[in-house]
Length: 56
Image (cartoon, rainbow, N blue to C red):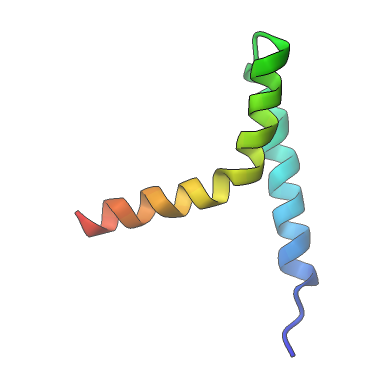
């Protein structure tokens, strides 16, 4: 059985770092909310962009 605690901790730290970055860039409340949402999904966007780059 694989130990997922390490990867969960890494994802949490990456989420906090991304959230801080995106919220600092926000100019209004709603762009701050959008920044939190972006922080949740940035790994999926990163992998999609990487695979698109490698494909073409």
